[in-house]
Image 1 (cartoon, helix red, strand yellow):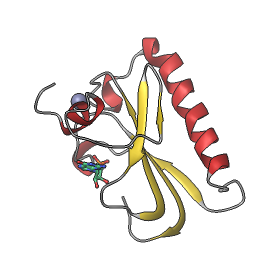
Image 2: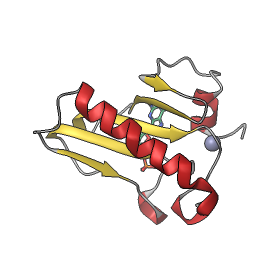
Image 3: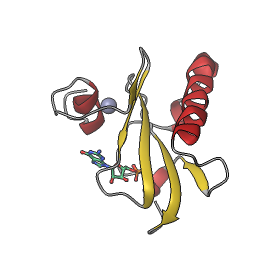
Length: 110
Ligand code: 5GP
Ligand code: ZN
């Protein structure tokens, strides 16, 4: 999707360092962090939102949570506050499915 900001980041049209990349997803920091650690876990396929998920996305969802667990360990968050958030409806501002990993001190709601 040409006009999708996350597709443009994934396609490297916008330079961005990825914290993690696999065949199916990328991880990069949120530009306007709501917590001490605020990473976005973004599937490479342009899935608009939660409502567009089907059984075929089962492996992708397991991979996303496996990556989240890895990032939690890497950032020593196991015994700290962390949360995974997926916004929908009017709470979702970028129409490309993404998971927020928030950890440590909170600044505001995502
Ligand atoms: P949503 O409200 O859709 O769940 O969250 C979208 C998130 O994407 C927001 O937290 C916002 O700060 C972040 N965001 C929007 N545009 C960009 C961008 O160009 N680069 C990065 N790294 N994050 C972005
Ligand atoms: Zn997209």
